[in-house]
Length: 199
Ligand code: ITT
Image (tube, rainbow, N blue to C red; front, side, top):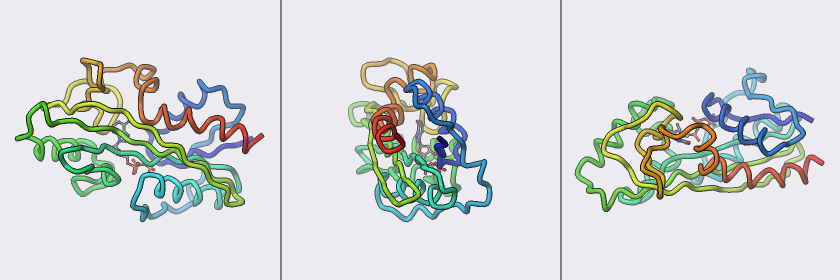
């Protein structure tokens, strides 16, 4: 059985492959790049779950195979949850991780350590070609550093320090990050649902 990973973000594909392979799913994981003719879906939802479902349904409908999608982002408490669903284009250009991180740090420059709580959020969606859908969400709570540290991961990883750790997400190994991350939790939660619906 084929399961499409409905994301164009190469970092997410790497993490999802590791997470889903560790879970031992008996499926062939195929990236969205195998279907270059499927147009990018407009992320018009107002929640992570809505956007994840939009992406999963678009690939499932277009390919005739079940598809899983991720919508994720960083939610900063002192910014009332921003960047949130706008995390990938916080500084304007979609996917410019460095500009997004630099802008966020500048916006938080006056905020002291006691008020720098934040979490990563991920909605993991499964859609079948017949329209069946499921969503599972996961979070990683932490605090935001004043400057980036570490070279692993992607996006805002160099500034998010998980609660209970003294390192940033960008200083964790891939395995350590997947074990605690919003994406790890959401997709491990989705695994039994995939098993049930794909048989
Ligand atoms: P797809 O929509 O094709 O999946 P995308 O990169 O556009 O790819 P999102 O709209 O879900 O994905 O945006 C996710 C953004 O949130 C991403 O660009 C990062 O800035 C941030 N983000 C999500 N997960 C993260 C993680 O594990 N570590 C660091 N930043 C993360």
